[in-house]
Length: 83
Length: 391
Image (cartoon, rainbow over all chains, first blue to last red; front, side, top):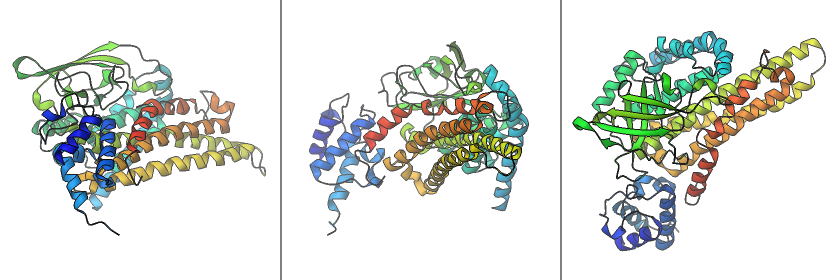
């Protein structure tokens, strides 16, 4: 999952540095990701993992690092689907 | 509880008195000469109003945020410029108080604000950022003896020449990204303001907001430790939009009150007939009630989210959209009400020297849509709307 997240950030995050060189807990916003770019990252993550981030998760702290994004995805993917 | 309520009521009645005795009689003169509303600010100092929000442990008045918002409204009814100076000062003090996180320098600083009734101005906008407060060019750089220095080109600094201290947004370091920001608090004596430009605007003339090149040398402790993005989302943006919209509502309410007085005077001249202007007044009233509803509901939502443990909901996109909408809606609706009042009063409202003059109100509220340009806020909202769900 970590690698998939990195690919999405590389494609949409518009970072000023190489994503491969980023530590999992490095601050993506400090690495140059703008609010607008972060929205594109969120859209791409929703599309790729076929999930929807609920409004409570739509805040900076959830998307500020690769590790934080991974935690959010694990939480959403492990939720029992409501049918 | 009752002591706290009494405190809030006593504060608001003091503000009402200052608004009537100092802000109102000087409002036309402040506007005409584009001069600082010194009498009003001195009276606010004497009443301890500059530290009203601060907790009593820091020497402040301990009043609630709602009371500060109500004070912006009351001052706005009498002098828009005085209300704007008061509001902008409160935004900085409230922000620092909400994000102290035990930082000793800032606790001591806020005690000084209370003791000495220091007036704080902000240096947030910057030439070259296109009006985006979330980006900075000027950076904190190392100076001599472990101090920090910076130089910022500010297109406007409201009451910059009259402030004791400056609340400045900067890049964290010279190699930091534009969005990697901090807040620095520079005090008088540490700061040099080089005037850059004149001040002869359409409205809000008493805020005295020309451009400046701001240079300062500060200690590292004068950089607020709290993360800037949290400070922006939880305090600077919502508090700014709420206090501004309260004073715009105050200005619009006074314009409406003048229009109503005009209609009543017309009705007395021809008893038994409803004057034609009364119908127009009814239209203005419905515009004013929309403005009031938006302002009050945003205040209630902010207070509710602020009281939740961790205040995390304030950082969500949904609430960012909420308070952005407040700014856009209130800044468009307030001048609409004032223009409606002008339509009611006619030439008596258009003239600057009648009891029904509303030109100043209209001009002052026309600044609202460009204090952080609405189009920039729409751009942000457009992006957030791509992903936010239940807005």
